[in-house]
Length: 127
Image (cartoon, rainbow, N blue to C red; front, side):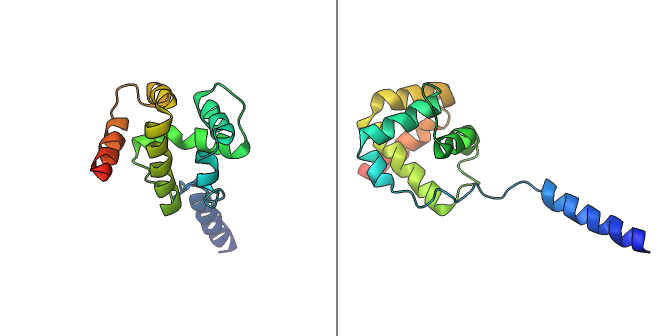
């Protein structure tokens, strides 16, 4: 009987650990995006990190590790703050850092499958 309970408990723990995360970490959700977006000295190192052209901070590494999956799954594991923040960052890059936006698209979306949608959303919001 004790062995059965222990086995069930072990199976429950194993199932909980094997379950995929439902959201990305919210550890960086309270970052001041305006401060980063309005200061190229802060922004460019993040972009270079994601492009693999520079060193990464811990939060840059976190972003880089999830960017492809977030694009492919329409940010399904993003928190609401992350979803809104990604829209703001993409809009800023399209408007103010077109060269880097093109590099990011070439690296993470070479066929334009995902970026086209974001560009259309931005155009509709500006209309």
